[in-house]
Image (cartoon, rainbow, N blue to C red; front, side, top):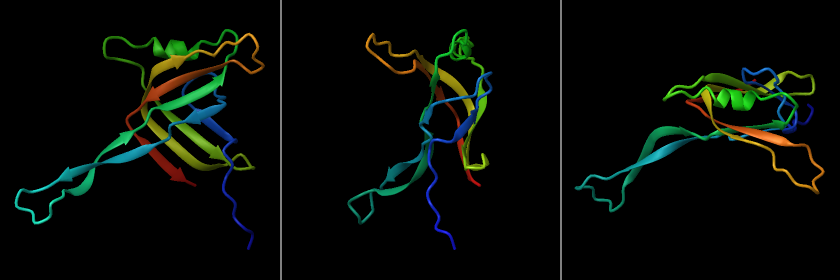
Length: 144
């Protein structure tokens, strides 16, 4: 039986509803369950019990190289109009060597809360990177 190795992080694709789908980095695929502390006044224990509470999802950050005449991040952010914004479902796939998905993250009702331009430096020798930060209402994980 061949030994199983963990998947590398560098082969992935993201469908975010935009024209260009290539990203150099995706972070924030985090979810947690907040603990609720509770204690009855007549409890013989002098400490509260803990039980599961609300789910909380971190914002997701997508980074990519700046390309001439591509302003999709700012265009999406500009859809904010008095408590309304264009929401999108995002699908992020970690791929194997055959380009088949191994893990899939499905992000529900995402919308941009921040767009960050590149860090400009006169002595730099890097690609100009822009980032978009997304808030969302749910994260489903599928391990294929």
